Amino acid sequence: MTEVQDDQRPAQRVVAELRRRITDGVLRPGDRVPSTRQIVRDFGVAMATASRALALLREEGLIVTRPGSGSVVRVPESRAPAAPRLSSRDLTRAKIIAVAVAVADREGIEAVSMRGLAGRLGVAAMSLYHHVAGRDELELLMINAVFRAQPLAAVLPEGWRAQLEEIYRLQWRLYRRHPWLAGLLSLTRPPFVPEAMTHSERTFAALAQLGLSPDERKRAALALPALVRGLALTAAEDVRAERETRMRTTDWWAAMESEARKNFRSGNFPHLASVEQAVLAEDLEDVFEYSLMRYLDGLAGLAEQE
Image (tube, rainbow, N blue to C red; front, side, top):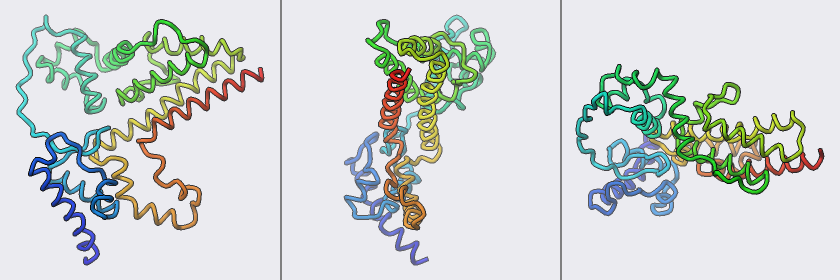
């Protein structure tokens, strides 16, 4: 009991100070609050204590976690006006898709339903079916919309490598902007969406310049999107976990610091102990760049052997 009380006192001290800053307006609605690492530096507390302090502020409703932005001061909610009723003439497929994409971006693909979209659009649920056959078609239309909104350049870059970099950097950006997208795409059962199929077509065209055998081209054309999509699924899972737990990955590591150190200091994981928290969500951009560059290096070396 004493240990718990001793552990809570530093966290309460941090909470009291940050609460004061919020109350006094030093930290205004929407402002980022100090990160766990900044709290450690400013208050001289352990990472676990800093993480606990932020968790307490969330429980009080003073701060919220925004995926990709960290912890911020809660913005007072104003009562949203009722969604205007749309006439059947005003309701369009484009409006349905736009709302579906916005909901998926903000709340996850699981929040998208025909009934839910109808409520947000202020129409009867059955009216959506005049424009979209159902959930399966809606998902295809959403994929189509995000790829169409940011197409590949009309003029190809010079050389196979630059062409592949353009394709897969664009895919990565789309996945990061729309975390649900990677979950709707498949390598083995791909959706027949022309805007997405263009990426595969250009991949094969770029690989044809390398002089690889047909089998090597097929393997590379599958491995490249698999590499990018795999990292994107990791990033999407982190966004989902952050949304559900209201805890950033750095906060999770801070909360697990004691358990992690116990394992690292056991002597059973000497190589893991040397990196510890190095592989975090914030590093995924670097991991993507490293993976893509090394894979393309490998293709270049393979082509030289052909």
